[in-house]
Image (cartoon, rainbow, N blue to C red; front, top):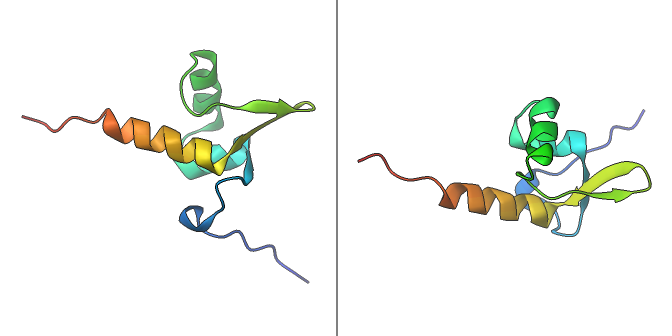
Amino acid sequence: MSTLHTPPFHERDDDELLTFNEVAEILRVPINTLRWWRQLDQGPRFFKIGRQLRTTVAEVRTYLDAAQGDLRPLA
């Protein structure tokens, strides 16, 4: 019996494709939150391959970097 090992996010290649569910897991948000962000044109950008939504590791990293840049220290 073999188990599929997924490397930690920081070790993944930028061009690797991620599913909608994988992105929700990485960002630690409910899938419905990710869907809502997509409706509001927020969050990582997704594209369709056939009927499935996909994004890249690089896109999620870009989103996280931008989100961290929006944080302001409390005065």
